Length: 187
Image (cartoon, rainbow, N blue to C red):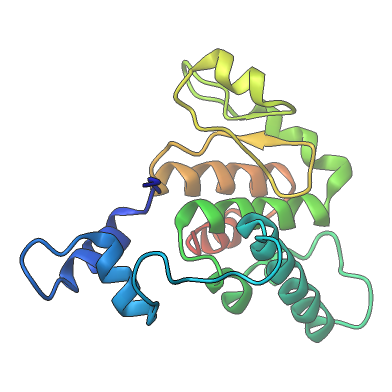
């Protein structure tokens, strides 16, 4: 049997769907998803990497949103387009929303994104250009690459800290503090 990590709210939801004493999470998920009993699921073709499937869906959605926002080049000083409820809602977890917004910020101003490397805590580095740098400052930082960018960020902080890091990133790029806070509230 394999283990997977799920957020606390998702775990509570799955547990709340228990119909009989001793029903395990796999049985609950099979019932909720309408899947057959153990060993009866067939997969046609090679398994797809869920991360790649999600990335492709997000890229398509962002491209669609960007086309609807403007037919011309986005003003690199206009951060208002980062308040986008539809694409951000595709990410159910705070980490996903955090990484998505950071990637959009990078795509908006790639030449200025190095500024985020100056954001750090008292004992930890928050951003880096490689995973090893983040792990060197603290082994439990859970570093993740920011989308298709060459940058990495720690992800084991609480949502408030993620919002703070994004707000600081936006501010360093020239975004108004009030708008930066509104953008970060989407996490």
